[in-house]
Image (tube, rainbow, N blue to C red; front, side, top):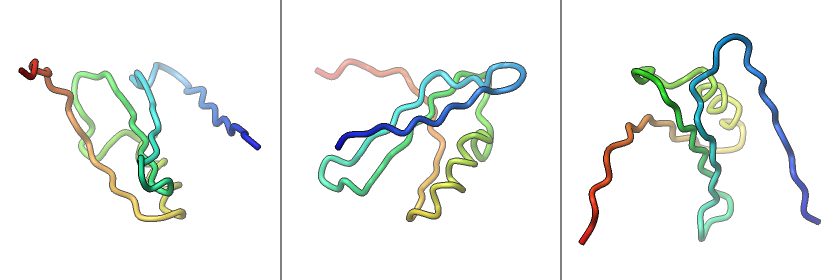
Length: 79
């Protein structure tokens, strides 16, 4: 049986700056999940956005969590 669980968020006020959210499952370890929140803003928030921090708190119940912030850099062609 295949099934889908949908969690919807409608934010009050201005947009959160969230551009994209993707989830990935490890190729060899199907118990490992990665959630990527792509933001667009003038600066990063030092410890992460409130949405990300709440996801971290919610997911702690299911296992070890590693939460970090990354800044996108220009990708140079590989030759």
